[in-house]
Amino acid sequence: MGRLVFILLINLGAYLVLRRLWPEVRTGWRRWALLSGALLAALGFTLSWLLGRGEHGAVAGVGVPFKLFGAWWFLSAFILLLLGGLLMPLFRPRERAAQARAGEAPPVAESPGAVDLRRRGLLTGVGRALPLVAAGTSAGGLVAGSSGFEVRHLEVRLRGLPQALDGFRIGQITDVHVGTFIDSAYVRAAVAAMNEARVDLQVMTGDLIDDLAQLDETMAALETCQASHGMLAILGNHEHWRGLKPIRQAYEDSERRGGPVRLLVDESRVLEHAGQRVRVVGVDYPMSGRNMRARPERMKYSAEVAFKDVAPDEVVVCLSHHPDFFPYALERGARLTLAGHTHGGQVAFFGMPLFRFAFDYMLGRYRKGNGQLYVSGGTGHWLPFRIGVPAEVSIFTLRADA
Image (cartoon, rainbow, N blue to C red; front, side, top):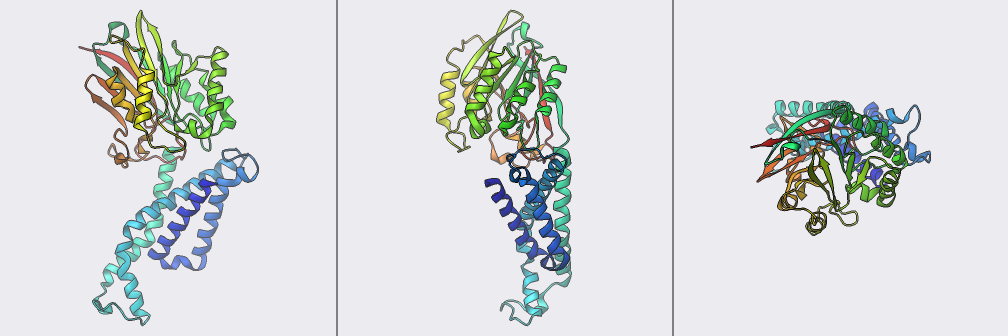
């Protein structure tokens, strides 16, 4: 219900902006087209819920098209609200001109003759073009966001890496968000991509699932892992929100069945590869309740508990859903930290995330001292919109650096 209220508020804001920039939209067929589109979009997000199948449920035949239309409409409204809000101050002269034509007294500082007709015409054209820009941008981002993931190969050079670990390969998936737009088949495809890359270890760094009705199928997809050291997983904020108890139980049941997946919650696991030990540390998401803000005291606690068995000469890889844990991992000897959470902002231009100000570590590779951090752009999404930040399955090959 909260999501529906948010969608309605965005649509209302977009309409108020649009009627200011393009007054004709308030009458005739344009008004009915807007109303019809908004109703269809709302139906796309609520149809399964209305039929008793839950917020993320599937409705045969019409479910996916309706949801995609709803996403397109919502994104168009959001972009319109954002861009239109920035342009609103430029349209005040149009209002004053309209007042003058209606016989109202203009402000003392101006007169009807002061209105620049060329500028007014330009602003009118911009106001009418803005909905097309918003709709086109939304459609392009929706196509890119619905086009699956790419397999990204990265080489990580670590100073002093033992020769036995030169060539050790790790596959990472993160932020899959099985739910409204992502199903367990998508997870199975991501695991298959890591299997095909013949990685030695697979990791899942949080936000696996939003729809608990798909939990069993999702765990079965993870269990198709064929890596020699299996798959190690950690929790993200969405696991805490959606149902921590059943999700942890699903991981425990998988381990009890002898599956290849293990969940790490402020703990570590030692792997032996070609006679060399590798310790993988997995930390919990640093939140309390539904507050998504990372809490330093929680990160400090996780660092103290999860790294307590780490020896000074060990090769340590840290798994953290939130990338802000990087300094804590680095301080305790982690050579490589893998994180997600940010989705890379899902929008970037020329390789620069549009919302890079939102996180200290937003997307890609970061180096500090003898440690490195990689922040994935995410394997899935909770809303299928991406520009310049494709969904990814990350394949890391460790290399010894002299």
